[in-house]
Image (cartoon, rainbow over all chains, first blue to last red; front, top):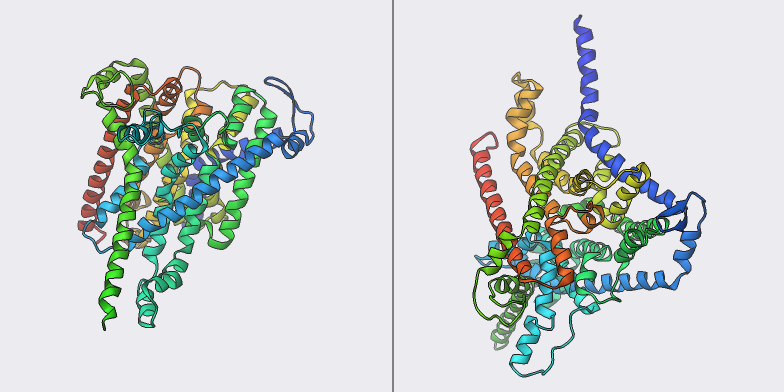
Length: 296
Length: 277
């Protein structure tokens, strides 16, 4: 073998190398994400015959039902409302701790940071379930209010839409705080001092400098909270009443209970498209990199 | 001049207000979990208030509950396998996308983080449809594949951030000194990315161990993970055993994150003593 041959061969290996490294993830992503989503898209055109039976009788029936049936409109509206309230609460309430952690000069800042990250590590189902102990008839709030004699009978707080929102806020608030914190932290704090020397009041400096500079973090946090709450399935079951079903619950019911695969696929694709659309709008303005930065 | 002290006072009050509010948010985040922990030591028959006395009976009962032990073993094995496979695959594609000029690099990284952006319910339904089209039953394998898919973006992002942060200087220096590709990887790349790999392993394990929504779609009949088992138990009533399980899980979590912190700082100091500095 001549030298030239060896070098072309090794160059061939060099070219193939990244593809070899990429192949496991590409196989996984293609076989278990791209292909299934494609099948799902095709399934929305299928005809539901009977429980678990469907026919490849292509048509837009499922989409027609989705767009005309008030039952689905109600679910979309309810999901949007719950997700929106959750998002607003998380961002507005979460802004304060994010600001305090980012600007504090306290020695205990590391502790605040650690506690902020801790919820990400605590079991989601336990965190959600814990609200039963807080809001339930024998929960902490009712027990306390009855003990001090403010009420005679327990308030009905659990198994309501409010309880669902409470659970979602509790689960998603750290996402909002973390993203807002990162954007305040990484902004140029000397601009605040500049605004102050130019005569701005502390409050004025906050509204003209800090708040606008932190808007990317607010947007990222809001997007994450909205997408995750709109896609939630477990929280409404644990904390909601019979009427408090969100879009995710509808999908589960349609597929796992009714075994109506074509309609279930239509709902799942609809959810993915709506949320995907929102993510696309976001990424046009802020870029996807920003979204993933906050997560790691 | 007489205005200055009131202004300062105003500021002070503003600070108190902000700090107080922050404190309340922290209370909101942790009080419910503290309630669970308190109730797990309650000797009462019911898993709720009032607290009648302290006892460890629910922990004893938990240890004797075979269903929960089995769920725990399933979750642990699933988490470990998911973490190992997910981290390995993520490391390979991060290497390919950070260290080589691959055409369509942007597309591939978007594709890798896509499972994060697609609603879990949609991903879950998709995999079930695939199985159905192939006429296959739901198995443990489906749960494993699904969990790898869900954790892949997280592992990838952590490792990718570290790899691109490192730059290629050390690797180039080593290979110019005559080290072959394998040696460079073993002696330079691997030790330098070790903190990210540990983080990715822990991250993937926790996400798998904690996953509920997709697991409810995917789990085969007769197999329960810890979250799906808790979820099934919640449908009857909140038994005190769930509180005890919650306390155990929170303790493990805090233990694990402390361990991760210790490993992280250890590796960081090693790296500081090594080629990093």
